[in-house]
Length: 141
Image 1 (tube, rainbow, N blue to C red):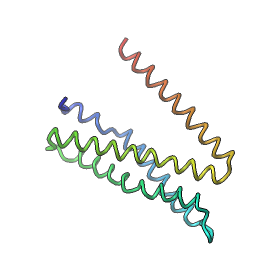
Image 2: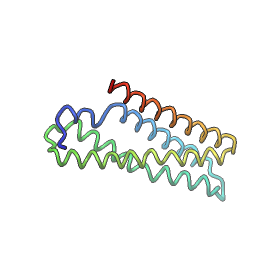
Image 3: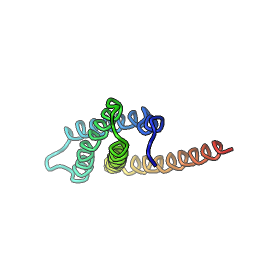
Image 4: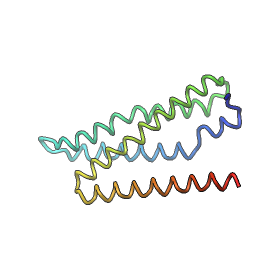
């Protein structure tokens, strides 16, 4: 199905941009401050977590570039738009997966902190998914 101008507006929202800005800021802050705290020899769990965060940064930058391009250039043809939107979704997915490194870093700080974070993530995902399903049902009524 070819996207229309109205659907293009919904493709990239300010909500997804805000989420990506928050994740990028959080990841960059973790890399900076946790990186400054590295001991000699460094804890390899912390190094692994920071490496995951660092590897996600180029994908986050890619998302921002695609978002800016899609919002600023009005002459994007439909095939290019769909391709860029899919590429953007891949960048978002990799960015969201980088949050697993945050869980790893929190677990390394203390197991109780890590368990609290993982438990909260599970509860949040269930609540968000339930709300999404409920809103879809209500939209069809």
